[in-house]
Image (cartoon, rainbow, N blue to C red; front, side, top):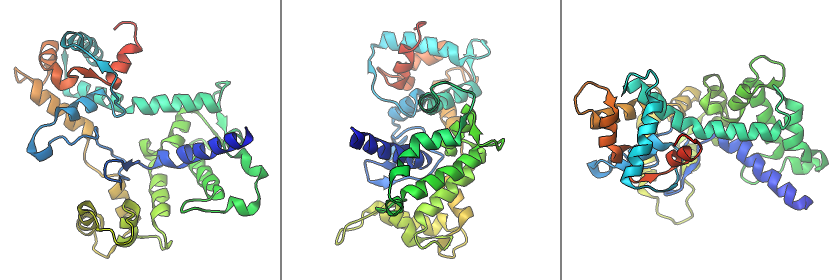
Length: 327
């Protein structure tokens, strides 16, 4: 039993302490994407210059969409009508681009809020206003007290237990805005998901640099960049997308052309500025559905295009339906 518990703790450390701060690899291609401004869907929007409605479904239904169950067209329209009323915050009978944008952002962030709530309850079962560092450390890293000092520093192509503890300690301090060494639920969200909080994003850049900068010179070379996104085997032909990444590095990542990425260039890479995916998708949905051209959507216009919004499948959107009696 002790061995099983120990293994669970190790898995949990890797999951919570590291992976939440760094986007997961693209499972289809084995490609790691560290960009924090994630797209709204895993699908391409215009593959081969053809519109893919599945992109819109995932954007509207939520980033963590999974197939919920098949719905008839009639049921899709009925439930979509209920959601329309929720999106229409000012109750004027139409949905503006801003209202639609806020809904898309909500569906995209719902997984994050659910995760924070789950972990907050796990670490803070008494639901106190704050969680102290010592309480968190004991729960997640208490097993280290019984480990040999040499084992704490062992690595297997990744950070040691001591490194993980130090990284969490540093991140905790940045999340702790009032400096009392205890986190409120909001501060805890910043600790778990620093990529989602503006004041936490520099720590994500620093952690990314530490992961990729193998020679610890404070910069990311082309070799280090490629080594992070692709690990080929000896004799293997390099995939085309890796060649594309080399070009991306030269043309767009290394902005000053000195052959490496500094901290500011890494930040521009993983936190790209000036593009709002939710706003772009809201504009697209209105463009596709706005029959009278007034830049707003009535319930009739949305229902007439129900296939664009939900089609005959409800994923996380459908799961949201199941959580509310009014549906």
